[in-house]
Figure 1: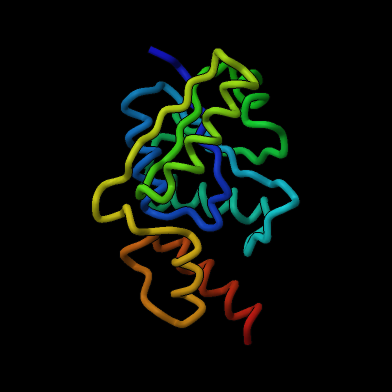
Figure 2: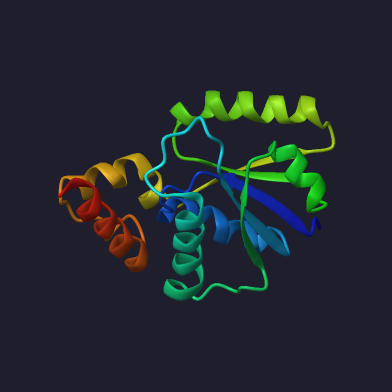
Length: 168
């Protein structure tokens, strides 16, 4: 059994879909590195530090997941470089719908070309969470909708606070 898997993403913000992938990954690996991307070409709602804090609150405070099995970090490097750093040869990726597949397939192929020892493992979130995306969650909050079914309590609180600060 591989000991460590890298789960990269923007997590802007984390959703129950992401959390499903993490929980399923914990059944397969001893440790999951939740790697919060901080590349500059993205337009994030939350800063890297805020996203790390949101992920930690969601996983450890709201859901009481095991802190010894999950590491939450920020990164600006190639994911394959992160794999080397954590001695992992597995990248976890979540798939929601067929529309995700083409992009994820290309990404997995590029990572494989960068390092042919790395495998990408695709996990699907539970059916009720497959339609959730961070983009939609942000849009619903912006329009003052209810997102309780999509993310954790602490994430909702921080999202509402951010939108009150930015859009009022």
